[in-house]
Amino acid sequence: MNSPTSPFPIPAQAAVAESFPALSATDPQLASLLVQEESRQRLKVRLIASENYASGAVREACSSVITNQYSEGYPGSRYYEGQQIVDQVERLAIARAKALFGADHVNVQPHSGSPANLSVYLAFLKPGDTVLAMQLAHGGHLTHGSKASITGKYWNVIHYGLDAQSKLIDYATIRELALQHKPKMIIAGHSAYPRQIDFAAFRAIADEVGAILMVDMAHFAGLVAGGAHPSPVPYADVVTTTTHKSLRGPRGAIVMCRAEHAAKIDKAIFPGLQGGPHNAITAAIAVTLQEALRPEFATYAGQCVANARALAHGLLEHGFDLVTGGTDNHLVLVDLRRKGIAGKPLAAALDRAGLVTNYNAVPWDEQPPQNPSGLRLGSPSMTTRGFREAEFRRIADWIARIVDSGLNGKVIEEIAEETHQLCACFPMP
Ligand SMILES: *Cc1c(COP(=O)(O)O)cnc(C)c1O
Image 1 (cartoon, rainbow, N blue to C red):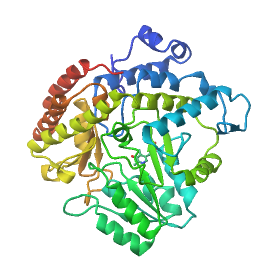
Image 2: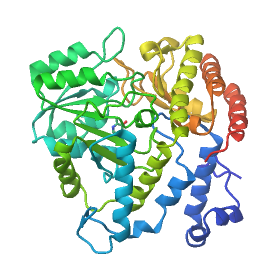
Image 3: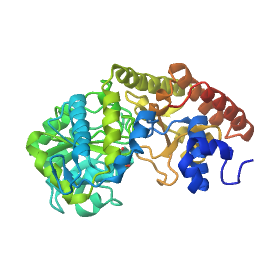
Image 4: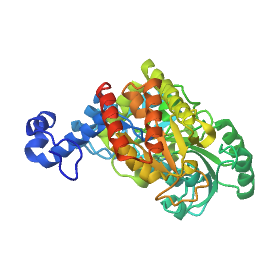
């Protein structure tokens, strides 16, 4: 029996006890919810571009006893005794990040992507200083100076966007804006741009105006790690990334920078913004980076791009408009305006059909962000489960059937059955 709020099977008590022996004894209600979430992740085709499935090894590290410990400071200079082991763990994570990305200096302590980005503002800027960054509505992130974010309240953020025709990043206009506003920092990076970034072009603009270049590779760090996207590290003064998106780790973040900026970045993160690091996450980041250093991860990253392309081709064949006409990374941004359907009702219908996506603004969207005209789709999660081009073509077919049926309930039910069956063939980690 399903409860009215939970469309996922309520697990038997014995199954909950097997998955969560301690938790099911003290808090069976919560343990049951976690088992239901496990079912959700197993039974659905997850296409949120910023999500993934962390490995069992990563999840073991996340829940390890190292979480019991406080470690304010950095390896070799802590404010607490008892750091014999955790210093080694943090050093391991740092060394692996250096090996993977080739950065001079690495800090693995930021609690997530937003604080990692804020630490860079704190390291290089005074309140009120000028920053040039991509606007949210064209694919930037909240922390790139949105008025809703602290970064837009405390700093003077000038926004660049895309070319109106090609919907590609407009480097000529970025250069003009940089010459006009003389930003102290320029940010490259995005949450919804389906193409690669020309980091050399950004570097040239930053050099021309004497700005710090920050690259936020939160979304595509896994592709960089696997060699499926150019690396920003040789070009940027500082690179930030989350660890839980295409990089496939725990929820956390890393800041990397040139040697000359190391002290500033470290001070901004601790004690500037945070107290103690989340040591279990640090351990899990070390595991993630070791996984990403293996040759299989390069295969994974390449397959993420191939799968996103297969999805894009399928959607184009079904008459969908895609922002920039396709993709060369892990995500596809569908412009639904010509299909006469809004993003939000479509995303809700797709979820009922077992396809988890998110509605998203498209560049120059006339609709409000609460009900925009686009749909964002990503390949990282299902590529982890082993989907290849053929499965991503089926996803395009399903989306087209649902849209063309006018979100017909019977069609949605049929497809829910099909997505369920497909998921059963691709076990989750
Ligand atoms: C996801 C994301 C972040 C923020 O990460 P959180 O961990 O959600 O705080 C920052 N920048 C970009 C470009 C992102 O996509």
